[in-house]
Amino acid sequence: MLTFYFAPGSSSMAVHIALHEIGVPFEARPLSFAKGETREPAFLAINPLGKVPTLLIDDRPLTETAAILYYLARRHPQAGLWPEDDIEAQARAISWMSYLASTLHPARRLGLARALEVYAVADQRLGDQPWVLERYSIADIHLFRLFWRFSGSLHPPRESFPNLYAHLDRMLARPAVQKTLQAEAAIGYELPA
Image (cartoon, rainbow, N blue to C red; front, side):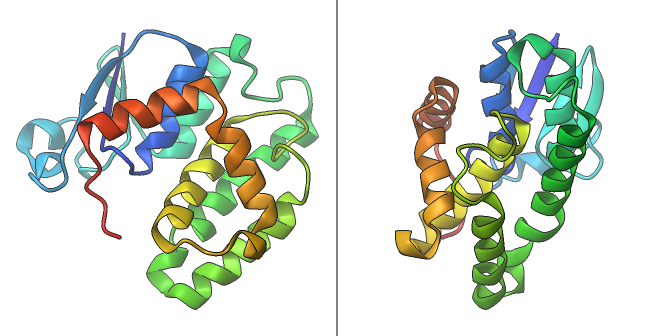
């Protein structure tokens, strides 16, 4: 049994999308940052860092977005979220996931100029291809969540990031993304602007 701890709109959204993409049953446990629920003893007993996402796999916690996305993609290959038979594509997926976690995600905390710079690199790196790899993957899900948040809060002009906006539009058309956005919006976002 999978139990998914998340906060609507946060990085955990990527895992939420992947869970809908693979179509397996899971128990959703939303947490509120505003109410301090990620700092409560019951959750800290599961994840001592008090971070989301946290996925319990038969009561064993797995943390960090990239690791959970990887686990889900490999555990459920029928969903096609991981390039199973292509070591170069696997390496590119890991490269993107590392870049997203270590460079793109923290960029806003380093100031708007830095954020605009790293998103411009991501836009160029993506290019006009429909997906990060040759086909849809967990790297697309992770990229989507980061750019969804960035574009939704800062509203940069579309011409500044044409490839990322085109990717965003493709992602927004996916049923799993729509389902996740509806579920999380119904709970309510508590993210700063």
